[in-house]
Image 1 (cartoon, one colour):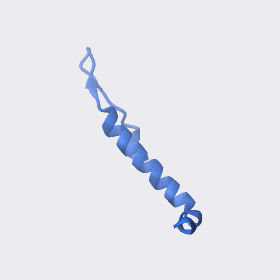
Image 2 (tube, helix red, strand yellow):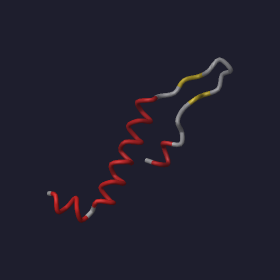
Image 3 (cartoon, helix red, strand yellow):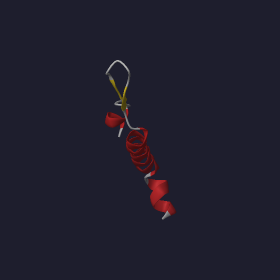
Image 4 (tube, helix red, strand yellow):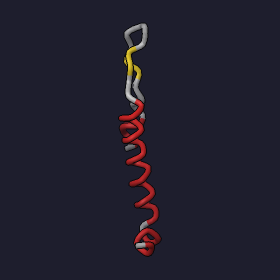
Length: 48
């Protein structure tokens, strides 16, 4: 198992960061402010 991670550490790291961005986007959620604008973390979608 460790040899797999050692060999593909960049791939595993990018996969982990991608999942972290997707999970944080859904956990953060969005809301509508008092001016009627939607406020969401859209920058996390392309990163994931």
